[in-house]
Length: 128
Image 1 (tube, rainbow, N blue to C red):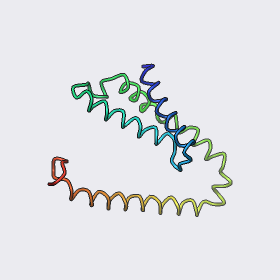
Image 2 (cartoon, rainbow, N blue to C red):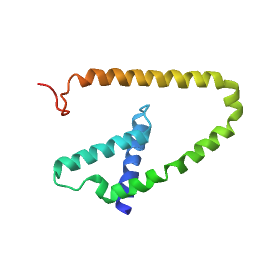
Image 3 (cartoon, rainbow, N blue to C red):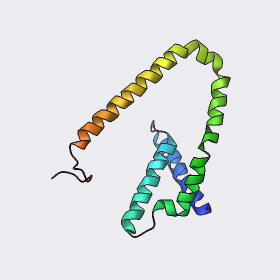
Image 4 (cartoon, rainbow, N blue to C red):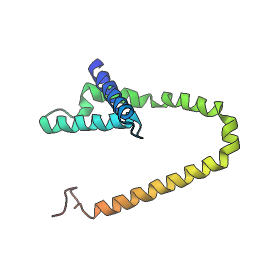
């Protein structure tokens, strides 16, 4: 369990350090998660017969973390309540930005899916 937690935290640290050193406008944990995905893809290519990630200590750690994910929203909720006056004065603008950005995200996702689905056959392999 400790090596799995170490891997997760090391990926997050690498992402944070890279973002801060390079000055990229990307959240460090997102870059760390991309690094973890790359590590797992490399693991699957180097060891094709390896157990699925869900059957490894990393899978066990992530299951526990996901089962308790709701606890991570408590600080965000407290922050929202603490900034209630700012939300009240800028509520309409925030709500508009939230709705518009959600709709734009759905639209872009649908367009990308539509563009890429024509390039793949039913098995997920590229068309020749």
